[in-house]
Structures are given as C-alpha cells and as structure tokens.
Amino acid sequence: MNPNHPSERVSGAGALTSAVALADASSQWPERLALIVDDERLTWAELHADALAWARGLKAAGVGEGCHVGLLMPNCVDYVRLFYAAGIVGAVAVTINARFKDPELAYAIAHADIDCLFIGGHSLPHQDFRAALTRIYPELATWSGGPLALEGAPRLKRIFNLRDPRGGDWPTERDVLAGAETVEAADAAAISPDSPALMMFSSGTTGHPKACMLTHRNLSMVGAAFAERFGLEPEDRVMNPLPFFHMSTMLPMAACRMSGAAQICTAHFDPVRTLRQMESERVSFGYLSFPTLVNQVIAQPDFAQRDLSALRFLHCVGPADLMRKYKAAFPQAHYVNAYGLTEASGVPCYTDPEDPEEDTLTISGRPFDGVSAKAVDPETLAYLAPGERGEIWIAGWCLFAGYYADAEATALAVTADGWLRTGDLGCVDERGRIRFEGRLKDMLKIGGENVAALEIETVLCAHPAIQVAQVIAVPDDHLIEVAAAYVELAPGASLTPEDAVAWCASRLASFKVPRYVRIVSDWPMSATKVQKFRLPRDFTNAEKIDPKAVPTVQP
View (cartoon, rainbow, N blue to C red):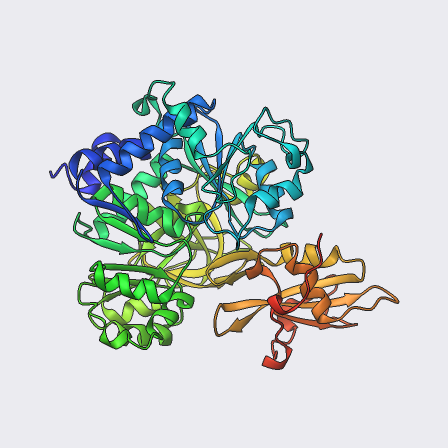
C-alpha cells in the first residue's frame, strides 16, 4: 500500500472533501507548483494559505455550511481560491457560465438560491458583470454595499466585486480579506464528504439549464481515478485552457490535488500563449478536449519548431480522421479519448494508456473502477447484449446528487435502482468499454458545450413575428457543429434571418446563437409533430450569419 497514491488516499479515508485534499497536498508538496493562471503562479502551500484566508472572509460575511456561493468571473486565481474557501466552510460553489446573457444569468442566480455572489472585473471591458447585474436588478444602480433585498433573487444577501479597476462603492476583495481578520478559521474536517461541493449548470432538453449537484465524494473519487489511470505525479504539468465553470476543468483540478501535479489555465484562450507554455512549462498532459482549441494550436507558424517532448498525453474528442491528424502532429503523445456528462462527475470513462492506438480513435474508453455502463433499448428498457446500440446508462460512485430544486427531473434521469439515463446513443462491448455514437436527446454540442435545441427555440418563439421555430445542428469548421434555425412567421409578419440572429444574440450566450436561419411556410410532419431529421442540412457559407455583424436587440 502506498499512502501517497491517489487511489489509496481516497479509499483509505472513504473520500475526501476538496478542502481536506487541498490541505493534504499542501502538507505533502508545499513547495511544488499547484496552479498557473496566465502569469500568476501558486505553490500548494500558497494556495492553501490563500484559501484559508478567503474562507475566514466568507465566514465573516455570514457564509457557512449549506450556503450557496456564486462565482461569476473569468478564469483567475481568485476563482480557485474561492472554490476551495467555499469547501472549507461547507458552502456550495455555484459556478456560473461567464457567457450567459442577462435572461440566462437572472435564471441561474434565482434558481440556484445564491446567498453570496462574487463577480470579477478581471476581463473588462469585454465582460462587465456589474453592468449585467444592474440591468437585471435595477435596485443595484444605487446600492453601496448594505443589506440586499432583491425581488428577483430573495436569498442573495451579499455581492463582492473583485479586481474592478473602475473602483466604485460595491464591496471588493479588500472587504473580504478585512473580514478574515475578525474570525477564527472554520473546521474543514467537520464537513462530510457526502455534502454538496459544486453546483454546475448543464443544459438538458428543457428550456432552462438544470443545476447539477456534485458532492465532495464525487470530486475526490473522480480526481483520484483520473490521476491513477494516467499515473500523474507531482512533476506533471496539465495544460487546461477550459473554463472553470466546466467539469472539463474541475475534474483535472481534482486530479492535480490528489497527485500533486500542477494545472495550467488561462483567462482567455490564446493559442500563442498556450503553445509557448506547453514548451516552457514542459507540459506532460494536454487536456485541450476540443478540436476548436487543438486546431488553433497546431496552426501556429512555429508549431513544428516547439519542443513538446515532455507531452505524454493529449486529450481531445472528435472524429477518428481528425484525431489521426492530431496524432501525427503530436507523435510523442498518447491520444486519450473519453465519454462523460456533468451528471456523471464530468468524465467517468477514458481510454487507457495501454489501449492499442487504433482503439483509442473509435472507442470512448473504459469506465473507472466502481463505475458500470450498459446499453438499454430506449423504448422497452431491455438490457442489450455487448455491441448492440442503445441508450447508454451509467451507475456507480460517479452519479451526481441530483438536480437542485427539481426532484421531477432527477427522478426522470436516475432510475429507482441507481442507473443514470444519459440520453446518449452508443454501445458497450464485451470488455465493458463504451462507444459513443450520438445523442438520443434533442441536443447540440457546440464547441464542446451542450445546448438544448428547445432553449434556442423558446427564445426564437418569443419574437412577436415568429410562430414556429425548429433548431437543428449542422457541421461547422470552427465549432464542430452550430445551431441552424427553421422559422415560420406569424400571419402578416415580416422578418429577415439577420433579424432573428440579432434577437437571439441579445438573449443567448454567443455560442448558442444560430448561424443559419431559414424562413419556411411548411414542414415535414408526422401525424402530430415536425420530423426534424427530414429538415435539410444543405446550408452554404453564403447563408452563414456572424452574430457579431448584426445589431443587437436589447431584451
């Protein structure tokens, strides 16, 4: 038994909270690098000390066990400090998509019952969260830091505006840390590993995203399993330029604190910086995940001259032919495929370093130990034999704790005997490996983001000129797939495709906005509903609309 091995650390304690795992990492590897975000670097000891100080600040602000702490900011060191600080006091970190537009943001804050919200001015003028909040809650226009009583967010009592160069009278990081001097440290060891650690919004087939609840046990076990499968050590550097509001970043972060490895992140993806850091930091695991990012890295003029010999693994999900191209670009790295969803702790299934190279291009991977998968007939719910295609079901320790404030949706997603109905199409072979083959759900996968077609359709149908809207996915060179909308106008109404895009651009995150719109008067129908699979996908570049090129229409 090796007590420093990630799996032994978890199994020996049953599971660890994020705070205890951070304290352990600080004790074992105090001077080792833990985190890089752009130009900021922290060792494990420094990160732990910062988290303790911010936890005392949260405690002074009235945040304690069971409270919901909203994080609305770009990737930054403050984000990581606050995530760990919330875990120390037993609060739930609510990671909010920084690309949400006002209606989406208003829904998330209200539905998540956020008690204390942290926003950041780190990326001004590109993202102005204070302005967005003031539009949503007009009462904030004259607020100067006193008690809050917002009609649209009754539980929200405190807002802190961090690193805003404009100044102003909203409480800042100075107020958080000043409060830290007035209270004793919280007892992180008193928090149960089965308590919720993270609330993360994940789009489903309903109009609004659902709030997935993940426990400390989920995070520690998936982190340990990842670290064990890929043999992560304190010397490893994991390049991960994805946003902190994704499990694609939270999961590798968990693996790093279980193994002592360092995670390299960025506020805004810049392929020049990423390639430079992959060389200078001797990155051993490229957790780039999506072709959108990898394509930009290998397109750099000096890519071939960079020394990437330290790279052992490259993780990206995409078509086999594209992955062969990446394998040729990174010949020293073992390609890693994967399958997952937020409700299953992000990614509970990766290919194995021992898998034959050709298998990794077509097989999504083998679930972690303690996680089971099967394929089920989506109509009869009968178990299917190995290799037969059906709906993928997942069971085991990776299952989330449910959708917050939505028992009905949770019951639909998880069977009485503990199987997660993923809504994804695929098969499980005789070795238990998953092959993902598409989606049963009416979902799109845009630049790595799950997007419900219904969400976009609901926004389109709110336009007074639109009577019916149907959204489908079409291929895209940059985002892999994007939304295309077919709309039928109300009698006597007029609307251009550009008008429809402008309407969506002011109400949806940019990646959700349709790039194509066709106005139609008749539909391919079954007896009762539109047959989406019969809608043409023959869109041309001439029809593509850039949301940035149309004037926005304020909601």
